[in-house]
Length: 310
Image (cartoon, rainbow, N blue to C red; front, top):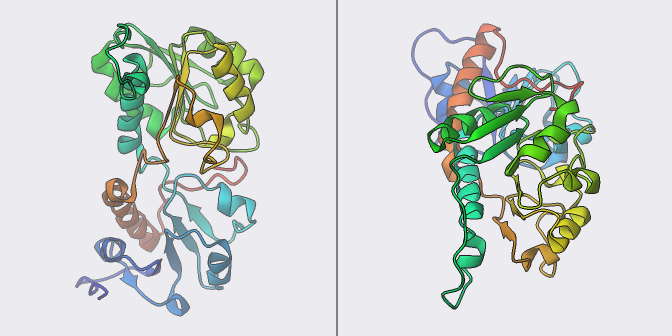
């Protein structure tokens, strides 16, 4: 059952929610909008992944589309994002659950849990403290900013890389893309949290991996396409880097016989840094706020920068 519109004056926010979701429909109403069929809608909240269905749904009255994902490459590559529609992504919406997952992966790497959890004998001692380590964050947007906050109690040194090289609050060092080699050379843990664009695709190449310390770990919670997979496998097999903790891979899902599954210095989680259950309340809050702004004609949150591809 669809929620009833709230009482009182309502701005012109007529929203079709696809697929149907009571939580997101309630979020629309909480923002002062009304949930309507597609034929009556001037906005769409889309958490599905059917490109052609969404293409057919962009009727002349639709002026805004809210996507349920932070990454927009699927829709961008399909050529859907024409300028007469405002597109908003879930940028920053899932920052807390993903940042928590990064902390879990870093701690697992530090204590060699990928080996310890599989061991059937007592084994040799090992592992290291996170305190005093350097964590480099490539792409310090919502996820990276939240990660900096969560890292603070661990007494780490942090390097924050952003596209514009701005000073990042909470980071010990702030740098731009040209200083990526510095981040790679100095970090015990390199965390990838950047958007996948034409500029960032395969940014972690064989050359970049060779710039990392031999005991450093690569942590990827962004997109698998940021990393050249074959080069990563080679670096892991030869000991060029210490290990990799991956919530995303290229290809994804990873084929059953892929070498990354069996390498002892690899920890893989199946794209679960933020699940639907963990992220739904954060997305609902974003939908409520953007419906409110859409109805008032205010600037939206998470607007897609089409020239930049994210």
